[in-house]
Length: 616
Image 1 (cartoon, one colour):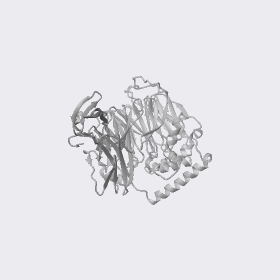
Image 2 (image 1 turned 45 degrees about the vertical axis):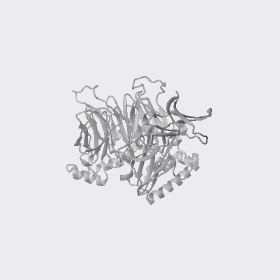
Image 3 (image 1 turned 30 degrees about the vertical axis):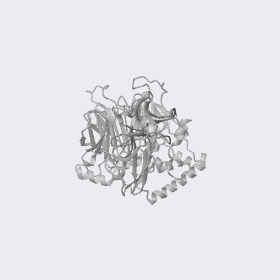
Image 4 (image 1 turned 60 degrees about the horizontal axis):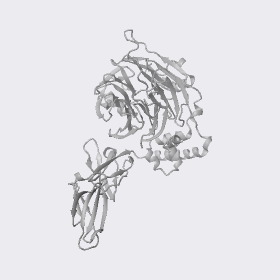
């Protein structure tokens, strides 16, 4: 094989015999003559080659054809096998493996970096070690660094009839400190104790949720008389601040209400009052908060509160925005119908920034939970945009790839991944460090309109107009469970909306439950371990839902602009689940699978128990 000219040399040998035989090369089928020679060597150019094509060599001797022989060569392009994701600790080493199969002639293997700039071939040096044995190649990366090494690596195999590539995502994480290691060991011991204890410590969420959600309160919009009450009055988004001190509600007609939380005490059950008292005391030190009305000038589709910024981010914000007091740094972002994003200071209701860049409706917004004031927006212009509010709202990245409207976006609690979903039935997972695509998740049969990560970042749920919710392992892309609201026939019609089309899905704060809102006028509560809803509540024209950060309440928004608050009984998580949640908050699926622990424990920690029950 000549790599530069893509020429393939076929050789047919005849052992012994005198005089030399004649060789005839033909294409199969059809016996099209390719060439004849005394040496049995034939050179083929790339135009004569294709995957699966067969070439036959027939040798004939002067003593007769019956003394001849033949052989058949089939040309095959390479196939590649590799792990889709790997993890390395900062300062450690990691080995990526790529296996070529089915290639004839043999393929040449290269390793490349897939960055935003053109791909570059990796050359062996002190940092990279490349070894190859037959059709298997390994790339060892030494002394891993987040800045230099995290991202996509490409294994490329090439032979004269084809090129195949496989992407491997490398995640680089900070090494565990001594406290983390001790915590891991203690957690594993507790987990082992919990499993051995069996039913004594077993937790069944079905029996803990003993009653249907009850309506606590309903807020109705007070709109100016000039507005048509049936036009643009939808509550497309509701949100609690991460600390639970504020509630935001897009009540239609360009208005957002900011309401101090908790609500008036007569609407709140006693069990909830005690939990909410801390957030109420927090607000007293900053003065008595009051309800605020934000006139956004455009229909509001998306809402997102920022976490309270970390001290460095808080100082930077105060220095660059001196008009805003240092203590007043809780921020609300609003996504508007004209593609703009407005940033508001919650305590004062002041407009701080106006972000422009999207060409169509901003459908959803999400802040990084770390408090570094990075905002992600999802739009009907088929893009996601990344904004840095510490830099006056500078747009730092545009993520493209969706073919239809982007409906939603969600950032994992560990800030490593971004999920986006759109009308083309697929879900995209992006790296929040390199802003590159990690993988696509496919399984829905219609537009995917809502997504959310579990509190430990180990699960991802997506909801679709096809009436299903799918639970995924975001690290491996594996589909763990599907929850159906209405069973549809395999041959779906061409419409994109069905009678039970889902509108919203969200995780509960402890990560054991899901809430969904659908067009069949029901709020459903699901337990992770159960394939059918464990509780229902009737609601008309629901569009969105979210849990209160400390549990106990679910807020839902409706098409007529109302907001409803429902009871959500708090549950005491099992020891098993608490251990799993603690471990998965800093361990990926691949890291768990590499632990020297029993298989059953690995299945529990990686939520593969859901997969087993799905198959049953």
